[in-house]
Length: 262
Length: 65
Image (tube, rainbow over all chains, first blue to last red; front, side, top):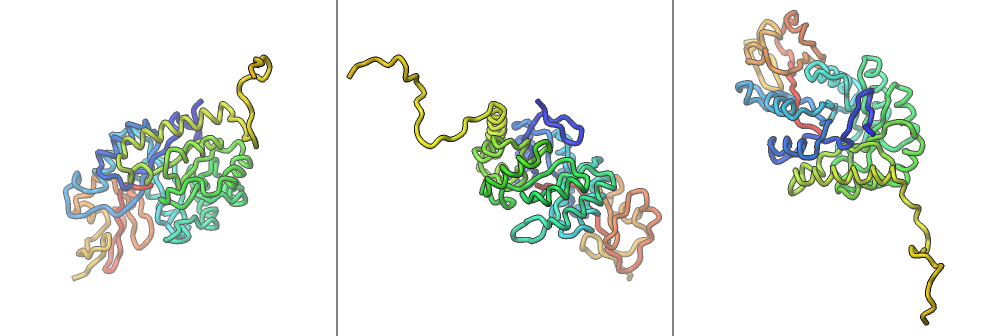
């Protein structure tokens, strides 16, 4: 069954960031190899003094359009509500989407969300007609405030951005999933390996957003494919209903009908 | 000579934001603009008169996570 995000049916549960790839061609190949439908894009200063096709932003935009992926602009690097709201409006004008991955960053080193600014920016942007994808922590209260502010999905982190630590607080992620039972939840940030992606999906998360784990790997195209498979495996396992761990052993073969051979 | 800043670089003052974009060859480009920290939608660029010391930002889609 496909995933519905703000009314759009999405069949790929792997969302991909577009930064830090060895080359633009490799980014495009990774998107296609993993059949990614949604990619994140930032807004930065355009290069001046060149022909249009040589400008970094124009050539990047052309590549993204060729990839056929749906664009999710972000407000990465914004430290205030004001900056994030303005960035969202500028992104909407040029990228032609009211989707926005909302980041309001509290600290440059930890890259943790400023949850107070996040809720306020989410409220303003929802009133301005945006469909907000908020990058948040696993704090249940903040999640509730984001929903009250008009968000219809949540994007909690698994670990700090780019850290590759995986599910640093598994219990908190389980509690988050349990609490927001019917809300689409996308893990954003901290995943480093396909096995961690599977683990997140086995917990019942709806999708995963990755960047560094693919882009900075030794072979981004192969790693993108590996993540596609791991996300799929985790989702299938969640739907299938994994067994609960048991303290001790339990025989698989029947005890009845054993021969007397001793 | 009166000057403005465009993406952090010094530039000669020109009459309007739309003229600045034309001068930079960006009139057809996928860019968003801001003046002194405020977003200026594309439809308002012609009416925006620039003055010495203004700070213009010209932004485009770029790699991001």
